[in-house]
Length: 379
Image (cartoon, rainbow, N blue to C red; front, side, top):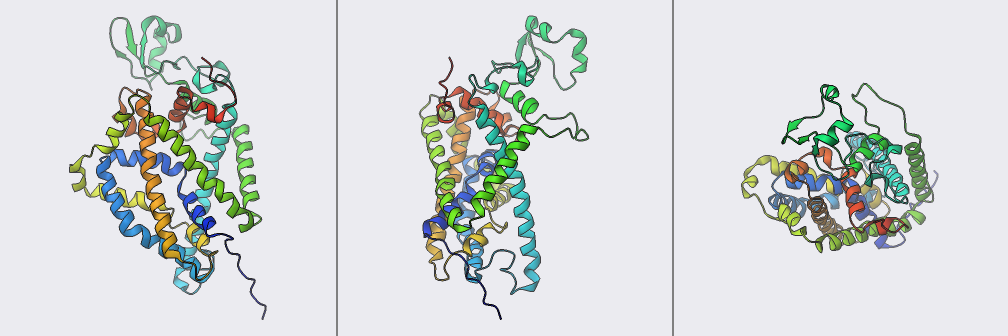
């Protein structure tokens, strides 16, 4: 009988901890958690969330990682001793494939924006014809347009054709036509090329496809050597986001008006605690934040030594994840307030607004541009 090959192990315990932390610090939590928290009562939502994290977080992490550490198997083979659980193992693999697929697309978008951030001025800071800006693009980010400016872009006879706009008389001189910021139009028209309906699939954008190919190539290069390279990469992928988060937080909190964003998050609506849907949303977000049920944690645990002190590592991982999850909505709500949105409550409770366009405006508006571009900010 052939001897089974010995499984690789992490060269340093820190690499295992960093890999688990890096699994949770991503755009998914950065976009979703602030929306869920604000929609469900602000800091009142944090009470059931922290409660679920403390009561259940350690246990779920310990069980899922411990399964891999005890069996020294990945998620697909860890359930071999429970035949009825093989379906669960297969489901985690399928879920991981879907998540990896759409997150790779998000990373491709990030690379696309990084490349365009080297232009001066930033493409999404101006209404430029080369990327297809329309007459509804307004660099002042206001929805009030005077009649004289309106008539130069939209003729009276064309008003009926713009069924997606709500024309509302403000005065004899001005009218509300629902204009868009350059960053929103850049995202809708140039990046994603949003179609009018789901029946219009459209064609792939070559530049995005190229960045997607580069993304998958980088994933392959990080994985094909096994833990020898993956563990080293985790030193950057886990610590890099935290460095940026701290920079964003410190800079944002020092700006005038940032306390308004903190007030949105930390002034609780205590009556929401009596709503069962708030507690349900807290548990759902808690499971999403930990990255459970996709097999990744089991896979990471399978590379630990059998006698690795897992309980201490789980406590460290859980507390760091909890800290980062609470830090992210602070940054996001400060961003939205400093952008001076006229109706912040409507903005925050709309899922469609939690996208790149809002953060593009903020990058263009603040000095963060110096972090991602070699050009000086144009004045």
